[in-house]
Length: 227
Image (cartoon, rainbow, N blue to C red):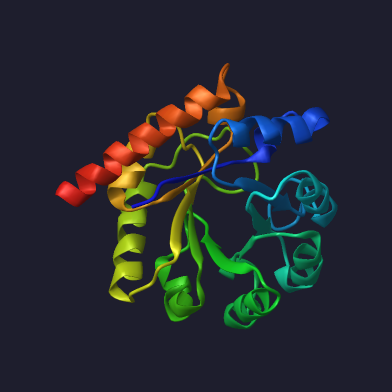
């Protein structure tokens, strides 16, 4: 299993965003996670397509954009035009998940679905074939720095079983409370892509933190394979 680390710019110094992104990419990050919040679907307001466009001007790294918004279909075009690589939407925010996943792919992006802690995996069972990424939230979305939701480990294991049973090659991503204390267990449960905000951008040495998180995730994944 290839481990991917996706630092979330929600935890970055926004006054120095280009420098912060360059620093974590130089330190070994695989992609950049962009948390998009509209103040309605979640109780916070963050970035929009213009920030993605600005990031695209300074990096060719994958931009992993997570839409925590109502009516996500209205954002597909703007984010495609801005240069998003992956666009992830919530089944809780739309009645037409399959249609919008197909449109994301049609616009040249990879399509992801994210499920909140209280949302069952059954919400995405019918669209597994359409997914390039499945994101399991291990906190309630809206704010960084929240404590890790322990039942997420078992949920990740169930998500891995679902993807494997369907022959899916979708990435299995986790977002929320990802840190040294949790990443190994999540990898052992089957996750391969990890969103880490405060753990990376809050570290004295982000590159060293990325290396340690990767080591712990790879050890967890190896334990799962051996088991």
